[in-house]
Length: 146
Image 1 (cartoon, rainbow, N blue to C red):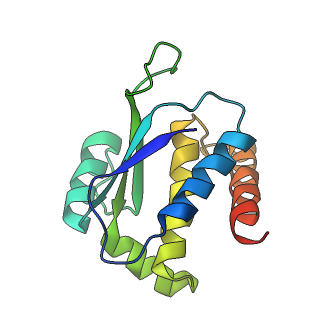
Image 2: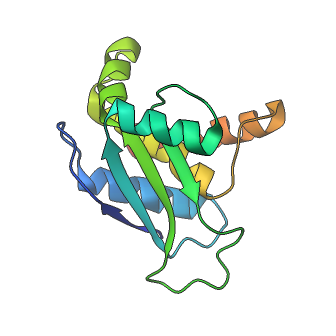
């Protein structure tokens, strides 16, 4: 199971037991080795917009960016950082109002999505989108609707 490090705490509540449950369920569901570290970072809209422009050439704010630093994790040690999840705290708060989730659950939804990206899941073409979406729904259901 991935370990994670929260580089800073957002201005909304997050339950580390639920984060642990998400990581455990992803580990149990996705048949890929997951023994390294993922950093989770909260930024303001301007900072994440700059990252989005630099790394994706998209000049707008986004809710989350996922970075995996290796093509595969085979040669990493347990303490190595496999990737980072960068989230816009402001966007999370705006989206929870739009989608009628509270910010904590919006965070969890984005966390599931981002960890799957770090594990090389994508949604650029229809069949990849369906696979990733089904995994997200399954993990969500197992963690929140038991």
